[in-house]
Image (cartoon, rainbow, N blue to C red):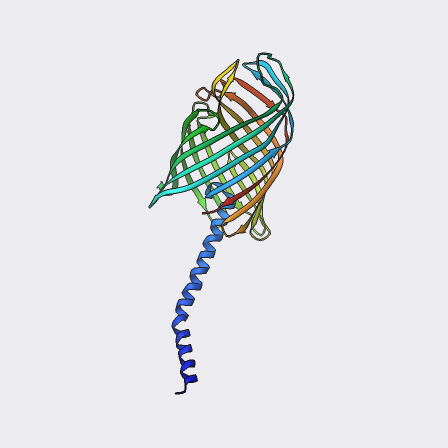
Length: 333
C-alpha cells in the first residue's frame, strides 16, 4: 500500500471515529443555545432572574409642596437629578428544590431643590443638592413544592438596610408563597401572598396575581403582575424586547437627620407610578443593555420614623408629574 493510500485510509478512519463525537457536540451546542435563549427571554421579562444590574435614572424638575406634622413646610421645584440602583444576586446554596441566595443592593439618590420657600424659619433646608446613599443586604430562601397537586414556590427574605452617610440601619423581612395555576406555551397564570414584616409597610399582607399571554398569530404579548405592573410587549430586533405600560416602583432610603423638628433616623419613601416604555437588547451572550422613559407620577412621598406605621409620618410631600429617562446594563447567570 502506498504512503498516499495509507494517509487517505487514516484520514477516513479518523473522520469515521469522530463522527459520533461531532454529532454529540452539535447536539450539546444546540441544547445549550436553546437553554441560553430560554434564560434570556425569561430574564428580559423578569429582572429578578438576573445576576447583576446597574441602572441610572434622571427626572425633570417638578413643582412640589410639603407639610411637617400637618403644617405648611417647604415648596418650590424638585428634581431627582440622579438615581443610581445596582443589584447583585448570588445563589450560595442549592439542593434539590431548595435555594439560598445572597442579594446586595446599592441605591443613591441625588435631589436638587430650587425656588424654595420655607414656611418654618427654624429649619435650615433651602436651595441645594441633597444626596442619600444606602447599601442593602438580603438573604433569600426559596423552595419549590406542590400544593393540591399544583406547583408552589414559597420562602422568605431578610433585609438589612444601611445608611452610608450615618450610623443608621434597619432590618425587615417578608414571607411569600406563589401557586402556579396554569402553564402553557402561550399562557402562564399564578397567584399568591406576600407578608411584609415591617411596621411602616403600606399593607402588611399583599395578594399577588400574575398573568402572561402571547397572542396567537401576533408578535404582541401582555404581562400583568398585580400590584406592580401592566405591560404590553413585543420582540424587537430579533432578540430584544420592548414594553409599554405602567409600573409601580417604591424607593426607600435611610438616613439620620439633625434638624430642629426632625431628630434621629428616618426613612425617605416615595411610591412612583411610571407610565412609559422600556427597551432591552442582548449585546453579548450574557449581557443586556436597555433604556426607558416616560411620565413619572409620585403617588406618595414621605419622611417618617420607619418603626412607626405608614400613616404616622413627619413630612408629607406632594409632587407634580414630570418626565423621566433611564439606562441600564445587566448580567445574566
